[in-house]
Figure: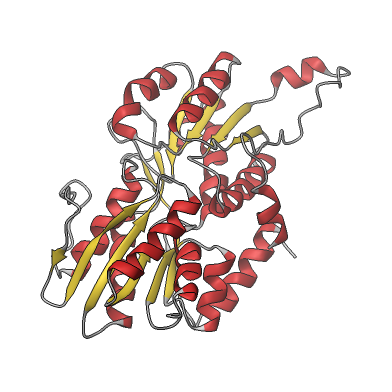
Length: 344
């Protein structure tokens, strides 16, 4: 998917003003001043966000707004600086994926007092954001756990990989995987208890060896995968909670000569993951439909900027259902995805 990979070359900003004039175009400044300007702020740079960007750009055209898509390359500091700049420039709405909601809530509240603020992908439920657009990450984690069970019906040893555990979506996914493998009852997000320690969790059939947190560092992600294979020779499965985790695990497993032996379960729709499902060495992946994250964010922000608050549901949650991608549906899923984002 050439367009996806090209976008990853952007470091600080992945941005487009849909229908907006360039800086040198002063022929219709009055008209430009009246256009609604909103922003879509990610939590990093990854193929997942390139798909979400395509949805935001399409949604901006559909709902007649200008959008900037901003991708912080170095975490929470960059994200804060980007939002501060947007607010200083009078942005009329921001859709953000908070990196560490507990620490960011005071700042998010400040932003919410100055513009229409919504969260997407990862929530900050204690903030003054107007709504959250995304999936139920806990249930999605349980779906990933079910893929582990399907591939290892007799049990086994599992390692979890993730970029950040400060993000609420990461906490919920991880807990969903753990609860599913330990056959715990399904709970609501409000009832969910986050497993705080990172020591092995031993169940009747499955042992969760730990969680490797790479800080969104792709080289660390691969190194942690390699170390896990070396440290745990009986390792049966790797579960990657972020887009890039399983592509790096694939490289590590290939290097160890265990491709097809160690089961790989993923989130999102990286090319390497989808090809691995086709080739049989990735069990499956949980797709969040990131295109709709971007598009729906534009729908909500455009309506709010025009004074229409009816787009905010009573529970302040716009559910974008996830999709389980496996061998039987991966080729259609990938073709549909390429068609959606205009990739060739």
